[in-house]
Image (cartoon, rainbow, N blue to C red; front, side, top):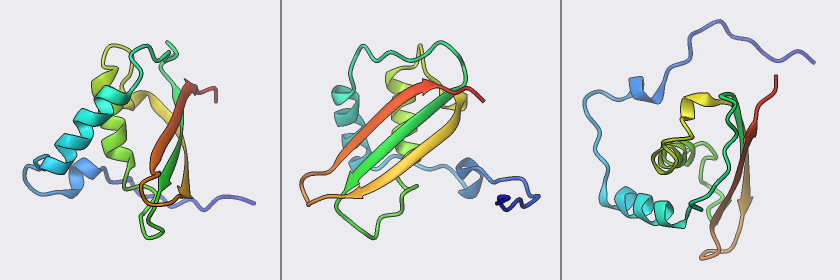
Length: 115
């Protein structure tokens, strides 16, 4: 089956908002915690085309699967700034799994993307 193709330039989240956006306190706490929890020695392929596979373990069935992507990728970039840039991501595989409240998690891996 042929995928649906629509000839329009995709809009970036950076283009969606008018004016400057600021990190709120919840985001700052999340960023700080995640930066501490991410492994210091994560092996990121040197090839500059990457595939990231992510599983969100979340407790809300109402949560949109894509709402977590931008903050997570930005924090990965901040943590691994010398070896990772989210502009090198060519493929994302994202999975949402519903878990009990208090059992939320993020599982991910980064690999080379070979077209």
